[in-house]
Image 1 (cartoon, rainbow, N blue to C red):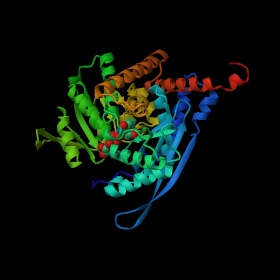
Image 2: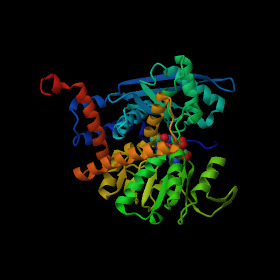
Image 3: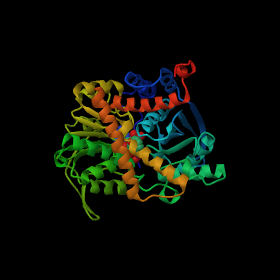
Length: 442
Ligand code: NAD
């Protein structure tokens, strides 16, 4: 854990623009959606936001004060749902955008949730395990009144994991003075986590690719894939695609990437990355690994590779107006949240690139989080096969709903996903009564 985390996105504008960009996408989609203007206006204003200062006693005896956030964007369709991110770039604007995307994602996936998100401005790689636990618990103590199994249910996001979710659930349970596994998802299995949650986001993206494979009659061994980000999401989609014969020719992490024309042996890369925390071109037979000769490349180069499928699975704002015209991939599966800016979208659309948007492509994570919440509430747990089967049903149902909207309305797939989300949110708002109803014109 010696490497630093980059402070800014390549465009350097993330902190000021990300929520405004998220709103632009809503407006674009609203032209095609069945949503009352009042309901659209509501979505432009997060329902509740909290910012907390978290003083932490560090291992060296000194005191550091961290900033934490939680935003509940909307709860029209159910309690807020959304992850907690630990990253040095976390700021209120980013958390608001991520929370809005969660509202849309839960609606696209047909889940009975609104959207929320949280985070702490911190580089967790600089903290010891004990400091990390103190910070995670103290954050929950500060926001305990804001969250709850029926109000706002957090989950993991970038640089948070099941162990952190477990600490947070225990801290909340202590404050609530009752066992509250349903307050947070993505927990370790023995603490009420769901089987199948660990790989759910990558797996959901994989099911989207399988649908495209059928529609486009792809032969996996001929399809070249590049993946940016080799954490939970990047590794899992790489593993599943590789097992089906897809050629994963490039992968990267925050330190840079590697490229191999014939495709990597993904299980070997994962084994080494998890043992050493480093991405290294390697081939393993059992526990014996040997380094192989490959080209190294930067994250920027990886995005511009001539591949069939590009999978951004790291952070937002990776494809911007600066590099969009250089993208050669004909298909992009957005597993990261917000990896393509609105300006870049326009350029990619003109080039005819098919973008499977984040609010659909990475919806597998929140879907299995929903399954975890359901299991916690009913106290009855499902097998991994059941979870995979239910996830498959949700993913292909919503992928095809969005795909058909795209083809029927002649709009791009991102707009179609937003239209699908806005239609569902609009229905829920209408059901509560809008001015149309109150003015006697139901
Ligand atoms: P993670 O922390 O497990 O992995 C993140 C990976 O990205 C790491 O390999 C890191 O080295 C790499 N990375 C960081 N900065 C990078 C950079 N500038 N260039 C290239 N790589 C970089 O996180 P994760 O859970 O895999 O999440 C990845 C993305 O997927 C995030 O955008 C997250 O919001 C999104 N997402 C995750 C889930 C989930 O269930 N984990 C669900 C939905 C969306």
